[in-house]
Length: 220
Length: 411
Image (cartoon, rainbow over all chains, first blue to last red; front, side):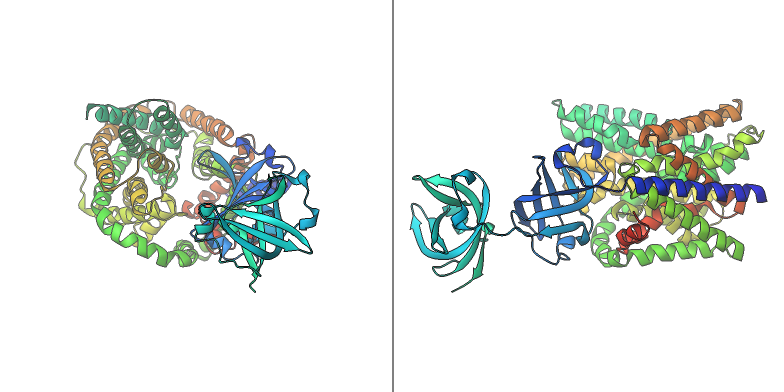
């Protein structure tokens, strides 16, 4: 019986050691988002990409990350984790998320388990002077002082931003302007705005992405 | 109405199938049923009834292989040892009758408990959840302390820690996808390690007594109630499986006999099965694969809940009858079969299933789990300590320590 005990114990420890070595070999590594498929379900991966979509509801935050591979992945951050995040997460920030690949409503997502699974690198604003027609259709983040606030059509809003002598009109649809997430903005306020760059009457114009993509940096 | 009955019959048939074949679980078949629903004009409610029927029937029938073959399914792992002991004493059918009593009693009691639980569970859960790790830790400490002798306590702690480490290494790393490691883990800890000694010894099964004397319910009432209450809790609270539920129930009852244990563990299982559906209504979340599938099929309102509980009770009666019949059949014939050959076949099945579910990595997991699973027998302590495989990761998770511990050991 003594021999059996020793053998079982030895076998257990040897087995655990082998599994440990195996587990160290397959630690999660940074994975290109476009490579993620159903084979990854249940595995822990690290993805890194730019936040191209951001929704908030009931204290939860739902990100969509896009990386150089062209892939797009959802990263839900539930309120319990979000409340522990030290900084904010904004559109166009680069986020590295560690989490288990899960399927939700037929789509893959990477589910972080704790606040330290999320690392945020804030992306700087683009200077208005640097914007050109090459950027058309891109999501861009700018900052400036509102020098004009005009209501056109059925409640649409045109804000004109000025930064170091350059101007950029920002189009806010009536529905966004009425949205409760849309902050009160007046002439003289410094704001940070994320939106799609488009052409209107052959002029560059920013179309606000959604009601929460405008942030008042400094009220006059 | 007729189509509902047809679907319930289908569910019962599938429940028997999944119950009898070790390693095939209800969760393997629900995606098929869901695909059927997606691609057809069938109403979803009868299909949901089929899934409930399958789950309930499976709960009963899965005790037949775990009694006669020593092959566990998730949830029945703790019942193997006492049931196997009864089998070796020629009382295999008694084990079947006790699990039938436990399952059916658990089902009836938990159906009666639904209303009080609905009022009680939500608020209590919020209260308990932040303290969950302390609660689980207390369960573990008491469980180990009950060994009484110093050597027993030391061995209990060692087995708990070894199996817990095994759980951490396999369930929370990239060795296996998600819960795929559960099959080799539980089969190794609670199945293969029981079968191996039978393989090496020349034992054969004694003739099984088939006794139809009515079972006295009264002495089993306490384990039944405790099992049902524990099962109801595990059906609603995440992270506590039927095995932890059984440990809880056992602590409440403090029963020593394998008979009471079997009643309690089977009560836990049916109560858990039923309450995983109730949780759909109470907290809007399914707590089992089958319940999640039902949640995808129908929006559970009060009407649907009553309907599905009705189906479960209806099926429970039929399943208990089938369970007794099939168990009796097995008891009459099993001893005639070459026992070692059966054990070998089951052992090979376990190995194949482990590889099928977890890939080749399933083999080393199975070996390590079997080695740890041998320890309780050779050290003469209770096999429950090996539940550390799930409890230790759970405790760390609720304490918020899982990440730090994993990174501390370099994972």
